[in-house]
Length: 269
Image 1 (spheres, rainbow, N blue to C red):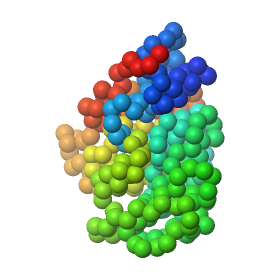
Image 2: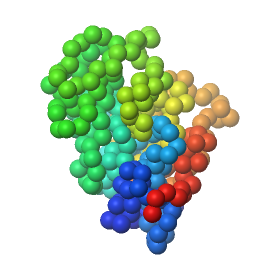
Image 3: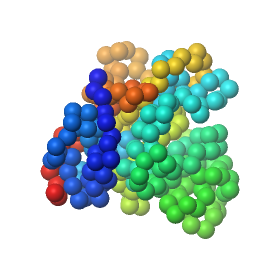
């Protein structure tokens, strides 16, 4: 397991990489700083084309909330900081309508420097009310991906996609968002939404942040729509494990491009 140290110098470099002004390799770095660059560098890079990742925070026993739905403190303080860093490095954050209705997330960057990403809600049947917190104007783009003709407030972008069996095909969602200029995307929740993109083979990286607590019941982190019946057919990603402090994160590379993105790249000095 590798420790990470996201110093001010490291974070300044990552934001410069996102802006296309620097690289993840040059410089005098400690071992923990270099680990931080390895963990977050793939999200900051824009030289490899469109990239979709996901992040899920869960307990030791694989739960993302209690039986009553309390999910506020599943991740520790360092796990939350990790999530906010990921938000700051991507172009847009995607959640399903269940998460938007139940958790009322803001999807903003508050625990590090960086711009708020576009906030994207997948809402096939138009269940999300127009006064939902995630649609409130704070200067970031707001997008609803839906199959119905429901009108949205001024400034909220609507992407219409035809539903298949009541849901929106993940590949069509990614294609439409990439076409809208959002090239690096994070699927943040909930577990059902992440699982659909994972099973569709659309994720390059999956970050699983594990907090040291046992909940004992409640919804599980990931349940695939069509799970493997044998271990021989289970997904076996290439994993790097990092200690965040209060939490541990497994950075799971799911594609050859994800492995390529981990390699340091030279850019502008």
